[in-house]
Length: 332
Ligand SMILES: Nc1ncnc2c1ncn2[C@@H]1O[C@H](COP(=O)(O)OP(=O)(O)OP(=O)(O)O)[C@@H](O)[C@H]1O
Ligand SMILES: [Mg+2]
Image 1: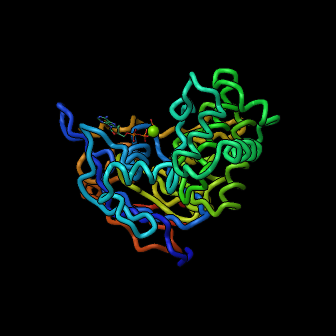
Image 2 (image 1 turned 180 degrees about the vertical axis):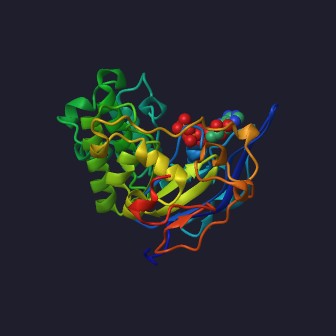
Image 3 (image 1 turned 90 degrees about the horizontal axis):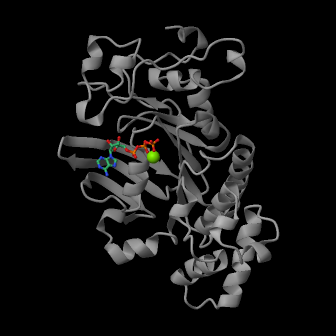
């Protein structure tokens, strides 16, 4: 792994929700760091804490949730110490977010040009409307929207779902943030549109040296997009490493389960494997390894919390019985 300085360093982040039924440890000791221009894939099943991790970084966790522990350093600045105004200035300028539903970004009753110009001028009043409009044209061009001058005069409902998401991505990129957190933005799109958008986003990140955290439950998306992958289960990172290593030589039984449940060439004519059981409720997790009740390799040792292994070339796993990095071992 490169020694280049990180743009974001998250250490031991804990975000808990204090509900009437108990404490949900949605993010329970997550650490990650990302360098400029790199893409980090954060992968896991529904409810594993991916979105809450993203919201925590942006200071968007509301009651009954709160960050209870951990360091969040962005360009060396402690994000937990920022006040509301500083956080607002940071969002969109330093860090921006792309949501699964583009309508979380777009205002349905405002023309696209007005929304985009406002997004630019909110961070820099010295830019006049004409120059801001030119920047909007360029931004829509970058995400592959044809006839941008004309399309800018439209309202969000006059765009298809894929085009709306492209606009939301263009807005996230407008102020050339150093970091983008993308929360499953292509999940609702068909695969060809998804592939085009992924390709364009990857290109733009490289060109602008923008770092990105791409949140998804879909390992195939991460395989083609991310430089490094963090696999999340029940609030914890259970495996992390360079994308090729994690996908080709997964160590954690949960990662192996995720990979085996993806349709692919190896599965032609064979039924897909699935991970047995359900994601456990965060209010009722088993002692020790949260995955152990679904894991074919679990034994008594797993009733204790597994340690994180010493990294081998940045590849780490949190498991007492990881798969050894050889395909023959993947039979259990
Ligand atoms: N407002 C809330 N109140 C109580 N608990 C919450 C709240 N928001 C999140 N949680 C808890 O945090 C857990 C993780 O939620 P999160 O939205 O991060 O999951 P996710 O990995 O993004 O899932 P998905 O793939 O479905 O988006 C939830 O399962 C829930 O227990
Ligand atoms: Mg989510």
